[in-house]
Image (cartoon, rainbow, N blue to C red; front, side, top):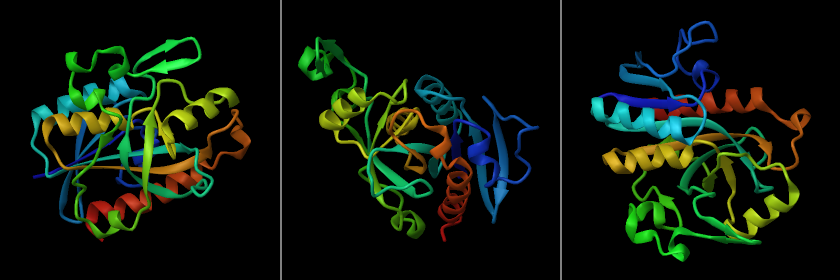
Length: 226
């Protein structure tokens, strides 16, 4: 069976899959590709958790896969995870799913809503309990992530999130991809390269090109089983 490779943007796939570039957008359609004899289905979902969950779930419904891999960039809360590093996100959560009560954040469990929805979303985190047994994947640092609609760039908000959840990285798609794979019972891996430190927005310090290059090398090793 093929492998599903999903990313939010063309750029996160361009170095991995030949023939994909800015002039050939892939958004919202699967493109079949062969890499070292492995059949790949490549999907660019668009940015954000709604687009990612919707398009990944559609792909996972229409075809059967041995493995699904989410590639992307992320911001780092952890000083040991510098821009350019590649990580394997094994735990992720929808950081904003809940309610505010003044300065306090209330989870679904605290709101008494956990029994009205999928228990995986009510849990503290979505966890990849059985990651694929791939040597290249095992060499990547395992990290805790959060998925957000609004990336952090305000010091009080960053501090509150770190205190509440203790994340190491953040993205706008990761938990949505993981949830779709858990729903469809497909083995999966979320692989991300750090492009920036989570701080007040400072594009001058971002290492996007370096992160994309590192991501493509790591993804190639994982997909080919190196």
